[in-house]
Length: 250
Length: 217
Image 1: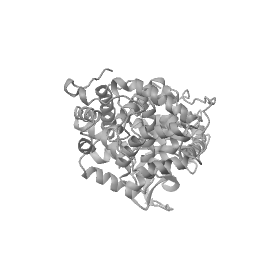
Image 2: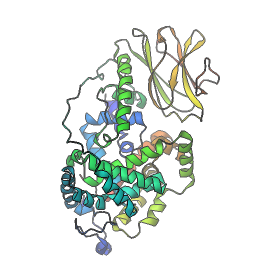
Image 3: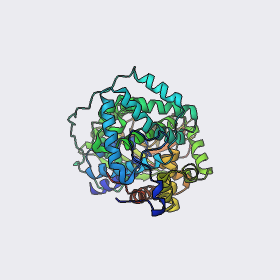
Image 4: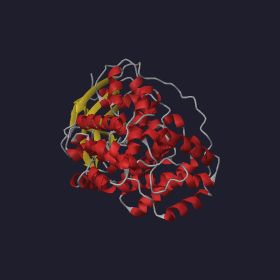
C-alpha cells in the first residue's frame, strides 16, 4: 500500500483547501481516519488556510447579526459527539497488483471504508451526509467487486486526459470503472460507458464526473470497455468517437 | 514557529484582548495564537451550553472572518450574507462538537465557512462553473486583491509577504483554490498546467506558507 498511501497523501493540501471533488473528498476523509500523519498535516494546512481567510476578513452588515441572533432561538444545539465504533473492513489486503494510479488509490480508499463519513468539519452538512449514504451504498457494491478473489485490473487514459481503471470480476459478473481528471462534459452531454461484445457496443452505464461506477452488464463475455460523450439521456449505440477503448483484463 | 513581525512593524501588532477587541479586527495570531485559542475555546464551551451572550461574543470575533472569505468566494453580497448567517447558526448548533485537539476555533470556523461557501458556488450549474473558471483565468490572481484590501492589518501584511515568497505557480495554485473556490482540476484548467504539477505546487505552496506564517498546532 505504500504507493497508494503516498498518492493519497499528496491530496492533503487540496483537501485542506476544499479543492477536491466530492468523491475524492469522501475518499480522503476516510483515509484521514486511518492516517495520523495526514490528520496532522491537514490540521496544519487548515490553520494555514485560516490565515488566508483572516487576511480578507470584513465586517458583515449589522442586520446579519440581528437576524442570526434571533434565528438561534429556534435552533436546537447538537449534543456532544459520542465516538461510534467503526466497522474496520479492510480490502487493502486483497491480492492485486500495485499501481501508481491515483484513481485506483482513491477508489480503494473509498471502498475500504464502510463508515463513509468524512472528517469532523463536514459533519454539520446534511447534504454531505446524504451524499455519503449514497456513496456508501454504491461502495458496498463496488467493494464486492474489488474484493473478489478473481478481480483483475487494467488501466488506461482517455483521449481527453483522464486516468481510468477498470476492475472486473468474472465470477461476480461485474466490473467497476474509475476515472480521475475527466473534464466536465458540455451542457446536455454525459459520458457513457460501453462494453464491447464481439464488436457490438452495448450500453454499460454513465459516469458524469470523476469517481467510481459499477458497470451495467456482464463483463465476462466482453472484450473491451469504451467511453464516449453522448447526449445527456444516453444513446443506444455510440454516436461519437470513443474517448477510450480499453481491452478488459484477460 | 516563532514568526515575529519585523522590528519596524512591532507597533502594528494587534493587542490581544479577548473582550475589548474591536469587531472589525480579526483576532491576533502568531505568538499570541495560543492565548487567543484558549479564550475562544472557553467562549465556544459556553456557547455549547446555550449561552447566548457568549454566542454574541463569538459572533463578534468570527463573523468578519466568515463574511470575508464567503464574500470572496460567493461574490454576491446577498448570498454571502446568507451563507454567513448559515455558518454562524451552524457554529451555534454544533458548538458542542468542536474538538480543540483538531485545531483552533478560528481554524474550525474558517474551514466550515470556506466549505460552505464553496458548496454554494459549486452547486451552481456546470455552465456557471465554467464561467467561473473562465473569469478566474481572466482576472489577475486573488493575491492582488488581497494586497489591496488588507494593507492596514499586520497579519494581512504577513500573508501578503508570505504569498510573495511563493513561486508564481505555487501562489496561483493556492489562491485560485482558496480565494476563488476552484477545485484543483479547475485550477489545472485555469492555469493550463498538468494535474500532477498543480497538485505538487499547491502542496509546496501551502508548506511554504505554513513555514512563513509560523503555523503550529
